[in-house]
Length: 123
View 1 (cartoon, rainbow, N blue to C red):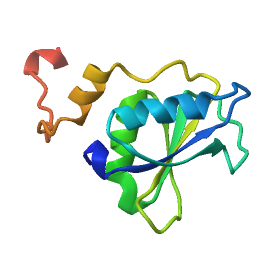
View 2: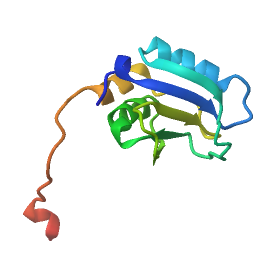
View 3: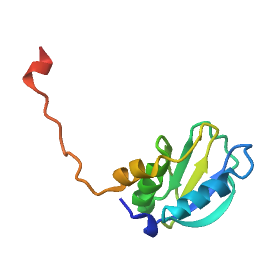
View 4: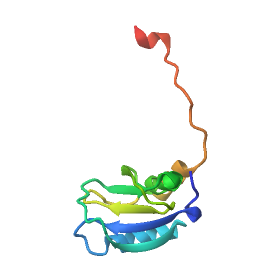
């Protein structure tokens, strides 16, 4: 997963809450992210989840780093050519994930490659 200082993120507001994108952008900057644009959602889509994370294939690692800050997000790969990520805040957004929880998610701890079920599970 990309480190916050390597992530360029645009923060967009898809709600009617004034100043939401600016507030969250400031919080992300304090966490080390490189915020580029702060505005209303240029796609003008209705986002009822907490957030959408829009990104290219080359921005997948950066998108995971941004998603860790929010928690439950909708992953939206798109056709952009760079690795910039759009964080689009939706109506269910309440707050960023606590810093400690996001840091744990960002750690490069190895992920299990497979899962083996115990024979007792099948009884």
